[in-house]
Length: 207
Image (tube, rainbow, N blue to C red; front, side, top):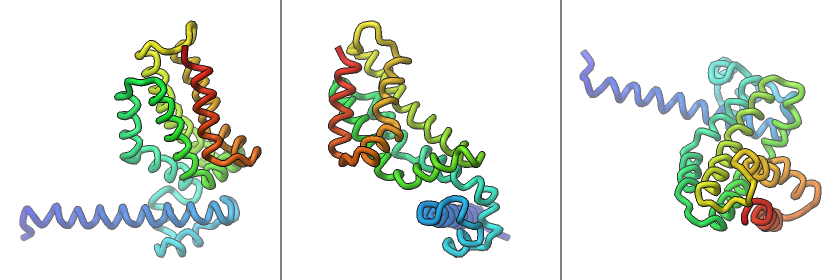
């Protein structure tokens, strides 16, 4: 008969294996989507790259169609997201808060730039990609709204500017589309884009 202590260990090993399998599938899918494109990538290729059976790809995310949303959702629920929100809520200086959120969104864009380009390009043609885009936007917008709420709490927003409009302004300057325009279309460096966005936000939001 198994001991009480052996059951959690077995469950723990199974959970660890499942998590490792999920990460391997996500990593393989992300790499292939970026290098080959979403529609040119097959489930068999994802399975081969992740060194799992094709059935595992379907079990993890319902196949290729669910993988983009699953990859994005995993990123938006990572522990550093909560840490970012906590730092927003704890800021007492408006300039430091804007500097922090501008740098955080720059880092987020830098880390997911190639994948988000795939998501944006694929979303009009695939329901899974459209869901992935909605998840990504909702996560970013939550952080920006918390920033706007904190600025309002500090009493530093320009006269007549409410939280909703401040959130919209933050979105305009810090969403992925803004970075794609500044960096990909204009050829700016990320450092230049970040510095410009910070200065623009100070002028647009603060008294």
